[in-house]
Image 1: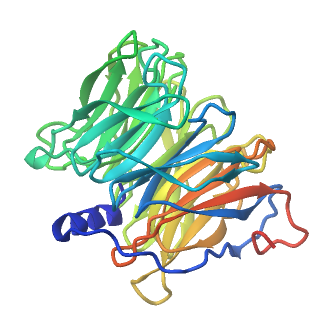
Image 2 (image 1 turned 90 degrees about the horizontal axis):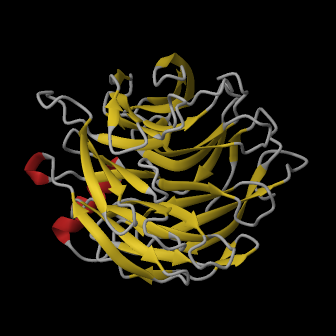
Length: 424
């Protein structure tokens, strides 16, 4: 859950009541800067209405019909919304899922039991829980095992982000959860039959550290090329890699520092195409500026110094980042949702979607900026219409006074004759 979202959760928890309705602002996908021509552009295809404060999205075929569906975590009203795919990258009306959640902050799809149907897991910062929902292949879900993670101040862990991977190599997805409090990450390892989980709490900082860790993000990859999945967790001032062994143990690497003020949000990819996994850290310097810092992997679980790219002097808050080859040139690119400051003020202005094409040598082409409604949050990439090109899903979280309800579907399109506006 992001900084402004936690504030909203506390506000709602204190004063109660449902969130007010969203404003009628119409999304505009205007290119603010376009100095390079991409072989793929994006048009606004559909605007979906979700619950209050959609903060995270998972994509998958939850109805077993060969079409991509969406699961949305709505922070402000504690609901989950399922949008069933209709084909051609379009979605039907949303259906609320009885979740029993307080403030869901992140959702991931995976196979968390022994059947062949897709499930999902969600973190709940309001109850300090991780909860599993098991799909039946029709779009219905039963609530499975939940676990309270109470390792922070006052027993609060505030689980904030999660990622999946089969760490113990039993054929079932496991989970790693970044806890905002408690100086720890929690790993949930599946049993051999996929019916239960064992939890491991691993330290991100020494117990006598004056810092609270404040883990913000987590990603899964094989960083030391041993064919076992590892994970990296980012926290205020740094990040740490945990190397997997293919079982129920992890080797803790030395934490590395970053220059980020609020802690890095990151994604993993091979940005220099050397066969080793690198980390793209989106460093947030408070309300001043943000930049991309690439830490190049050495193939053994270590990282070299950074190649840094300034995103914008007016980017205020970075929300999400994903890696994908958007222009299909064989190089990993980045997509980032952010909010910028109004010129000459300290007030948040419109949100932004940033597309940053990679060159394949660890550097990037100029940033492409596109305007969004205020406070975009969750971000996902998938080929929704099965045309061989990646499409984008963005959730619009809104703000305290006007929580939003929208989910934007951006379709990948051939490039227009004249760049400048999406969908025109």
